Image (cartoon, rainbow, N blue to C red; front, side, top):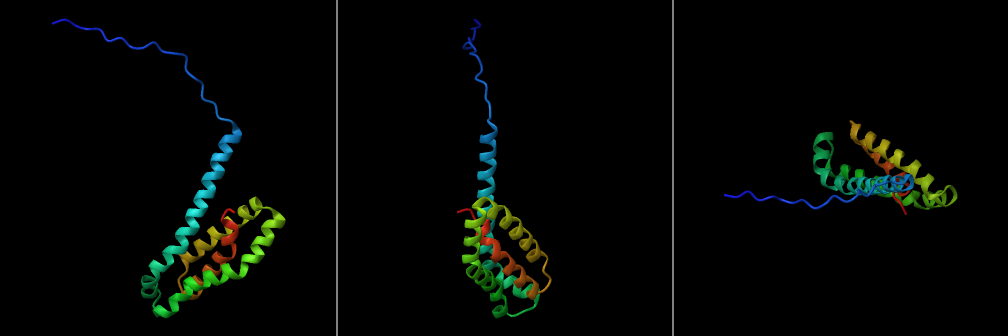
Length: 136
């Protein structure tokens, strides 16, 4: 048996990979926008799935839990012209940076709400900055 040699190709000079600070900031900005959109879309749809469980956990009727979804949509609809006007005056970036933390804190309030009334109040607070927390 003969041993054969394996020849490896010559190594070429490594191409240095550099990241511009602007590129990294853009990547983080896009990731933040995508996460915000994901968070608001999941929040909007998951409530409808959770309504039967909410009525059992909060010991209220199914008709009462409909207010959880309705309060969000009412607040969103009523505050839409105001949010667009503020975004035009303050800028879309500032509006987004203000609206997203408010939406997140309102989500925390909803998660910790022990009664239906606090849950509906949290959903109203979520609906107010929802337009500001979605990029457009």
